[in-house]
Image (cartoon, rainbow, N blue to C red):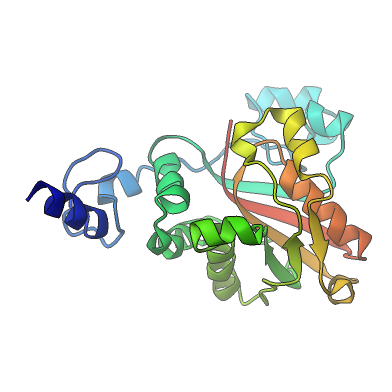
Amino acid sequence: MHLLNRFLNFFLPTACSYCRSSVGDSPVPYFCLSCWSDFSPISGPLCPRCGKPFGSPEALSHSPDHECLSCRRHPPRVDQSLSVGEFEGSLREAIHQFKYRPCRSLGGPLAEWMADRVRLTQHPDLVMPVPLHRKRLRQRGFNQSLLLAHGLSERFAIPLSFDNLLRNRFTRPQVELSGEERFRNVSGAFALQRPAEVEGTQVLLIDDVYTTGATLNECAQMLKDAGASSVNALTLARTL
């Protein structure tokens, strides 16, 4: 009976993954409505390049062009990055469940939550997910960034390009590495199958979590080398 209960709870969970209370009639798998509603959106003044929140509005008066110190010292290859939520609390738990359980069914609700909180000031020509290496894809069974990109593509009626940008080198998980190691880890790890398709286009890159921006910047460099006119990035969450 104990094994049967564990089996049923894995596929038909009755307890919220975050607070352990009953999920009740929540339409979202693994989460009660209270915890799902408790995600923390990023707000306040942000760096216009990397999307990093400033400590206070007063900090803007000491920041030329309102850019953070990191972007002024090391301009990113991505033209503009934006993250929707803070990588903490129940949103962090949802992303962990989505990627590592793995719970593919959370892709649609997370993409919807993301799209509800985004206002696109420009209309990109293409939406592209950050790719997984084929070995990692076999292990996980799906690319979490592709599921998010698919939801945003449908919501904003932007064509989805999912098989052009490739990860051609198997790398260590970024979560295991320090900041400088992350940049070295992904250097030269991406390629384009059809470079001509991105020439002159405005590309919107989609990923799940922004930490140092190393992966997004490496992808952006590849796209710009192929002639993309601009590369912006949108992530579900950001570490602060």
